[in-house]
Image (cartoon, one colour):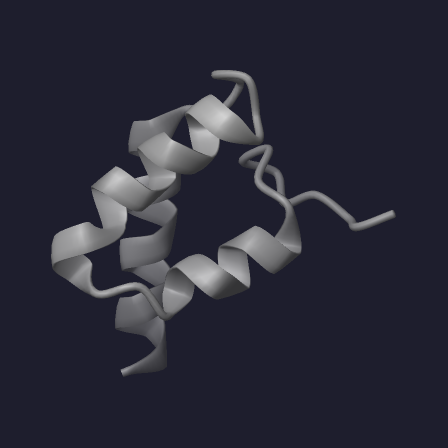
Length: 58
């Protein structure tokens, strides 16, 4: 079983989202939220998390 990040997102999905271009990130998170997470994610929190992680790696 895959561990979950505190945002509710699975770590595998988080890693995959890190490689999605900035212009497509919101749509990809919404798609995952609707299909895999049954609308259980806080989309704004996940977007913020991805942006923070990207800035940390720069």
